[in-house]
Amino acid sequence: MEVKIGVQNAARELTIEVDETAEAVEKLVADAVSGDGVLNLKDAKGRRLIVPVAKLAYVELGHGVAGQVGFRS
Image (cartoon, rainbow, N blue to C red; front, side):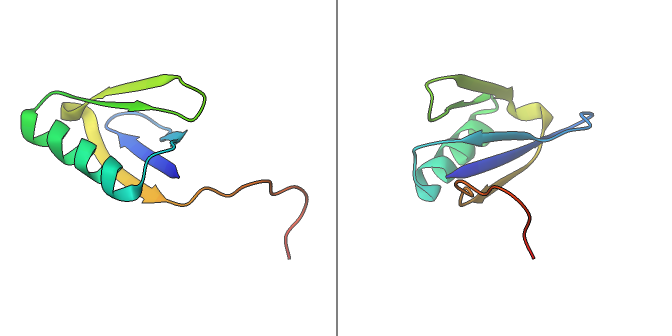
């Protein structure tokens, strides 16, 4: 699943591909925001993304796009 994270005062959003369900990621975000700590996600390749919740602008949950190559019409 693809997760896009907007960070305040950053020109680009962070995009991460995780193996978790939308409900699991939503719970992680809600727990991090209510605890005023950090959002800690692990991507499909084992790397970690840690974002302070004070800097979160938005979190967008969606399905990843697998293997698109070339032009679309």
